[in-house]
Image (tube, rainbow, N blue to C red):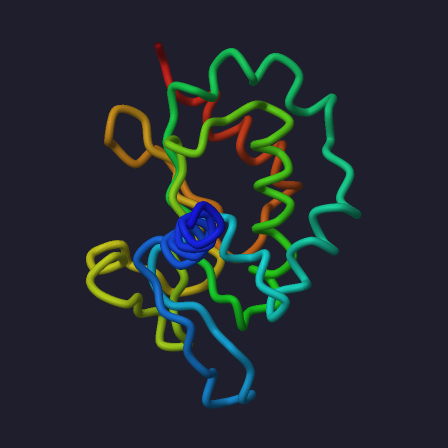
Length: 169
């Protein structure tokens, strides 16, 4: 009976760990594609091996983010990505590695996967004016203070620091 209960608990954690999302098929490539709000655990699926590869190989620019760990918890991030998009496959794992380096809690960011038309599962990205992915939107006190669209100007670390530095506390 204990084994049965443990299996049920494990199964429910796997099913619900992806958030409010759907695994579907990309009509262009025939490959699996996530749509909707997800947690980072969704990328542990073998269909998204690019995530672990990029995450493990990326070297965070520690000098660029020196001192940022004290400020970054005051900000929230909305990350809109396409699991089908090469830029998303490169920059989202890197961003999450930066967040891990800075100890950014999961409650400070959300991950929203979109299809090729830049639409989510429901209305997650309505009114966000998403033209390209990934789009990383930075909020301070629920007000957007800046975006990184498709790729950083310098690198993710320097672009985040530049956008956050504009904010007066």
